[in-house]
Amino acid sequence: MSSPDDQLATMLKNIPEKTGKPLSDWIKLIASTGHEKHGAILKFLKEEHGVSHGFANLIASKSRETGEEVDLVAAQYSGPKEALRLLYEEIVSFSEGLGSDVEIAPKKASVSLRRKKQFALITPATKTRIDLGLSLKGEEPAGRLETYNAMCSHRIRLESAADFDDEVKRWMKEAYSRSG
Image (cartoon, rainbow, N blue to C red; front, side):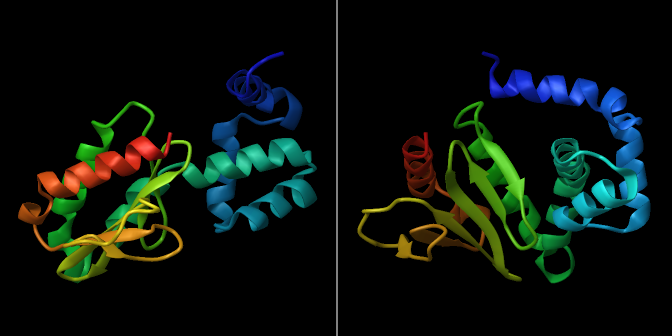
């Protein structure tokens, strides 16, 4: 039996044959429609182009990940929050050093850091502060480590690169180790 990665590679390779266009053409077409939500793209591909559900789902997913990371992160750190961009970059750089399996997944208002599951969430909370959410279920809040929300059990408020110190990095490394 082939692995999920092998199956994905086969589907990607078969897009032109099964849908009549290479993935790059589908992505350009989708971009020209203005559809941004996965469901709208899926409906467009299936109803207007007769693409089967499996291939429509794959094409929609690929079209949404193209360039999205840069745009979402740039939007989060624009205007009054622009000064926080270097701190964000430092956090991401540190997280990438935790292991080759770290996935950086930008969302509209935050960036999720994941392995098999999310271990951290970077949110530009105010124009002067990033909230670093960490998945540390079972840890008692202490010092700068506060209780947070359902997405991440704890958070640490960071206002400068100096705040992203060895203590915070230890907590982040611990959250990473628990997410595998």
